[in-house]
Length: 416
Image 1: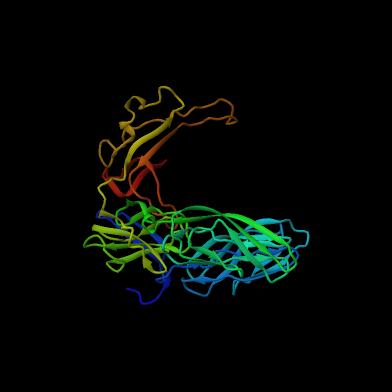
Image 2 (image 1 turned 60 degrees about the vertical axis):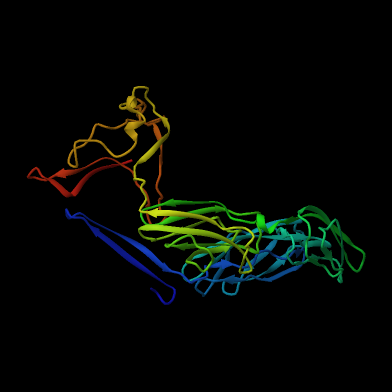
């Protein structure tokens, strides 16, 4: 077990009892407990003709960090990120349009990289720049600082149609304990010192904490790894999903086993639990806020057994596009394309095949089509690693040597 994060390039070799050998290179990452993430969830508004100066934040991973912008900001002016500090700075052109500009921010550490899209709201005059977008939860404390750009400070705020239990301070603090679930269309108004006014209608959704739970918790298996997927409630930046594995039984708490995943519900609802090993394993998906489990909603659970009973062969023919109505083997569909190969053994080719009905045109290759297609469904999991991850061959057999004996180091393989 590693004591600290590190990265190494390793080569893994394998040999079978007949002397056949193969080797492949891999990058091995031992990651910190907290995965690399961009902690900044939103950008403040930007005033057209004004300066932008905002510090982006990162968490986890293995510093040092390197920041960059993946797309251009030419539509509004010159913006850049300091690669070492994450400071977003620049000037918005005086002639820039009022626009919500998506910026794709890239963050790299000593091992990995992540990206996140942040929106820069560019406005010419007084404008409300920051509003709550996440749902509120009934009978739970809520606070949010509204923000405006442009105009002349100080600003004064007012609102109508707020959820019961929520108030707006004239300084822009939205706060309280919502008491009733529902969707509330609220009108937020700001006025500056010279009398300019801006108003925005926004939907404030109040949800029951008991309804906030992980849904559609599913697993897909490989020989010794488990891919997990799930769906989460309405997006909320303050909610996290934690996946816990326990070989002895269903995890009852977040400490009852090994945490294999922990991230915001805003992230992708999928993770890969690698190199789990043979045996039965139990998973639970907990929903948390500020490190506290939402106990009113029971965690989603599932159990898996490795290695899986699924074989590596095609399980279903999804569709065919054969270019010849009498293509070889067509009368044997779908069985001829499913399951393990059938032939005369390890050292002989097989006629148990399907031709895609390739067509030959007498125009020196100037027109198509040249071949057909078949779409197959497999029941196993293919892991995404360095280099090719999945290959299909047809008519594979060992080649005889000069003595007429199959040579285990030489194979005839036709990659499809």
